[in-house]
Image (cartoon, rainbow, N blue to C red; front, side, top):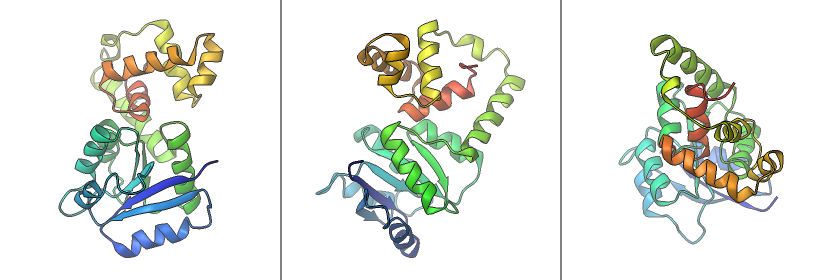
Length: 217
């Protein structure tokens, strides 16, 4: 796989250096930027080498990870944001995925998982680990109990449902096109239309919305 350029934003220098050092064995990952807070990150984008992935802490001075993620999603939608934080609160997970994050990791994650997350957000557009999946399932059941008719208000065609299903199964646009016997451009058009309709910032947000609202079996 080609070289993946990565940035990290975290106000703890020792932690930043530790993450960079722990990922050094992976030759296809190159750190091109460090920032002590969200504002510094924004001020230095795009920089000499624009990162493809940002590892973003949540609690930082000047501009926190939530606001910085919103800004990146708006101005650099091609950059993938992975939250790397100590906060296990499901409210943060839900909110970050909805505002544009492509993945959510706890700081206790092993380097192998961080590397896997980086690889997957680049290749698939999102990374959902067991921690996030548990929250998705919990919120899905909660929605059913509180508002059982919510999913009925969301209408999608059979073809759109098929595309969402395969996206959630981690198939690429090319693979989905082959299964549905359409062009990859058609698949991308359907995905873009769904993202616009549901207000999703990226593929991760679309998957999050689909699971939360029971749009797939």
